[in-house]
Amino acid sequence: MQTNIVISIAKKEIMDNIRNKWIILVSVMFALLTLAVSYFGSLGSTGWQDLGNTISGMTQLASILISIVALMLGYAAIIGEIERGSMSALLSLATTRFEITIGKLLGLGAVLCLTIFIGFGVAGLVIGLNVPNVDFVEYLVFIGVTMVFGLVFLSVALFFSTVFSKRSTALGGAIFLWFLFNIILPIVLVGLLAMTIDFSSILVEETLVIPDWYHVLDLLNPISVYSNLIEMTVGPVQSSIDASLIENPSWYTPGRLLGVLFAWIIVFFVFAVWRFHRKDI
Image 1 (cartoon, rainbow, N blue to C red):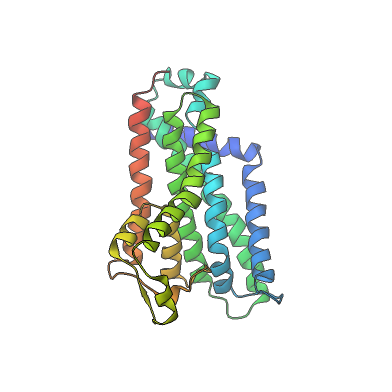
Image 2 (image 1 turned 45 degrees about the horizontal axis):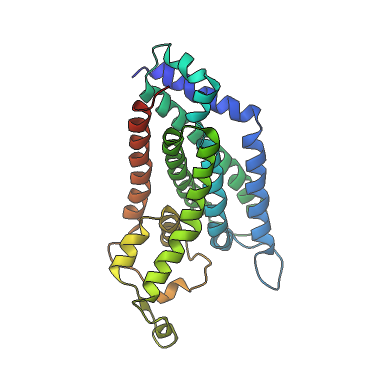
């Protein structure tokens, strides 16, 4: 692998997105939403909340927004170049398909991570100036885990960019993926759980013991893994069910959940390379 070619491809992705104002626009959106959640997040009152409460209210919103941004960044990374005819020119320069794939992942990943860092970082500084005794380490953990989560969806989008033959169908696939992870999978899992457990026990028991099979299947949804990881490393996440009522298995640890997110990134990157090698251009 020629490192200079990989770096050149990554730089091109970064510069293209800077020129398209992606970083600026999305960073501003992240910052404004975080500030809004911090200031208006408490029902019936307004005023700055500390970073822990802000993270609690922001996690679910962040998972929705960042999955969208990552999918939009990556869905046309390969097929877009093929449709424009620039992929043939790039391959004619003795560039391998592996170098192209990893260069695009690194470049688009840098764009995504920089956007998250700037948007959430600026908001965190503003909140820190208005709230005493701020735990910035906790907030940096939140930003770091959020970056890893974003890279999961970017890697999945990159794979789907090698699957479809048209940019428009790749966009449709990205939209389907968003619905799958944000809506379809949670509904299916809750439905399966409702068939095997009595939720009324929440009213009389101190904790609700969830079967291990549910936790295993929940690992198939990176959004659930992200939410659980934030809850374990930073604090409770706002949801319809009090997290203190749910007893997680002993093998549900921050290290393992972080490993699952990295596994998602690696597996779908390998799939993207494999599928790109088999694709006619």
